[in-house]
Image 1 (cartoon, helix red, strand yellow):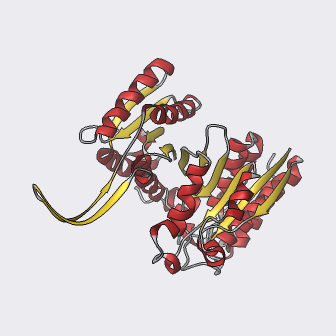
Image 2 (cartoon, one colour):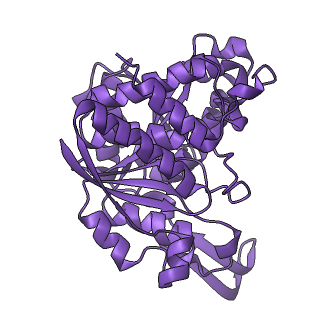
Image 3 (cartoon, one colour):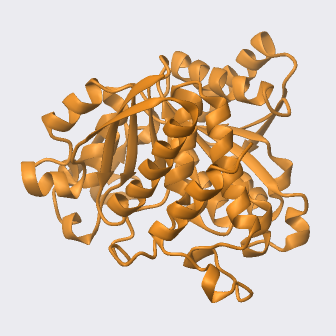
Length: 371
């Protein structure tokens, strides 16, 4: 198989973890007889520094000609003072999602067995491991709704002075299509789906609950559907996460809850994500940020980047065997006690604490052993 991959490493630790991700993809290509062609392009703060925009036309052209986008991380204090539309996050990530219709974000929150002690919850609450898939709607809601800031004085009830407004907008087709993605995922797992909203307060959430209920009942009667308010869901994820299998929710709630779920697993450096369009084209990235405070020091954990590459193989290219091989290699590395600093424990021997590149090399080594 021959595939073209747009490589957008970005800022901070992005370039160094991307190097390890590509190293592993090269090993997969060699072992399984594939050809992956990489075309690198600037995105985020580094793109702004060179082109005056975090998502320049050259980068969009690179993505247009690719079969998938492999993304690192963007942002940093250097660019925080820019106008909102030029910041790395708002000026690059959101436009990429809109440009390619990346409406479905898949974020697995998984605890690898060897890392159970690193999790933030008591071990008895995570006995047997944890495997949650959060399906987040990615191109609607408040992040893409109209917003307005007024510098006028109001005298309407208790509201006085300047004000700002953000609109959370969802249509029936938007809700139906993300419900389909979540249901398809649930059918491949335990046929259990939790839809999260705020239907006791928000009109958009009332519509969300109604549409999800009708869609599941009509199209996926085998699925056990449960509804939960977002505030209760946050508490339940933090105290009893094993009750969840597949979670589906709107953009902002998904953003918050997926970060909460990642914290439970012990290290945000372990968690990948996939953002998919209706056609299967996707952007694959670790969910952590650019971590400029450790950039260039060899301390960054590349496993989320590597696992994002595994998701790209599975969801964009249909290479399930190759994706599983990467996951098995990582499991072997962890079972043998190798760690980066963020997932090391007091019991980790010094000779098994690896640098960013050392972890990438070790995954490649174990990939060769996977049967």
